[in-house]
Image (cartoon, rainbow, N blue to C red):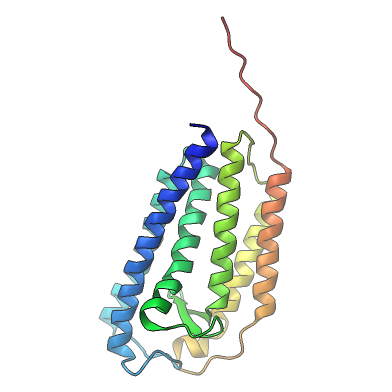
Amino acid sequence: MTPQAAAIRRLAWVALFAAAFALVEASVVIYLRSLYYPEGFSFPLRQLPPAHLGIELAREAATIVMLAAVGVLSGTGRWERFGGFLVAFGVWDMLFYGWLWLLLGWPVSLFDWDILFLLPLPWIGPVLAPAAIAALMTLFGVMAVLRISGGRTFHPPLLSWLCAIGGTAVIIVSFMMDTGAGLQGAMPSPYRYDLLGAGLLLYAAAFVAACRGSKRKPALEGRL
């Protein structure tokens, strides 16, 4: 089996785990909505009791740990592992909404709003935003792993780091800027799609810069 074939097989297992984990996550959300939104999920958000909020925060932190652990186990070098994490997270996030749509008929459209994350403050936005980010993560994760397994180095330069950090900051701001809707039970303001677009472009620039800086590893010569 070639290194790339082995990498594809590992990524297939990562994707299978992510798909199953997405069903688990969707099931938890269905139970939560039946408790707090029996008439159907919608904004304004309802406040969770402190005890339940603590459990939910711990569950979300554990989710990230599990996805990161799968990424670490999926490869050997740090960037191959990071690529595996991107695939795990991206597939999990996309199929989470896929399972909700299949089981609940929600979201009706990609423009339906959702509460996305709770740490350190509530993240809110239309489903389109996390879906687009997840699709990009999956694509970049697969491409990075295949480049590395194909014998090319993958060393993001300073420009990649700056673009990735900038993109992350811009997107997080787009999710957390409406504190009234996230914390005070108000209706959300219009989402800043311009910030989402800027963040995605910065992510793409970071990945392109990392690929342009990569070179083919020198072949090892055999010795008699």
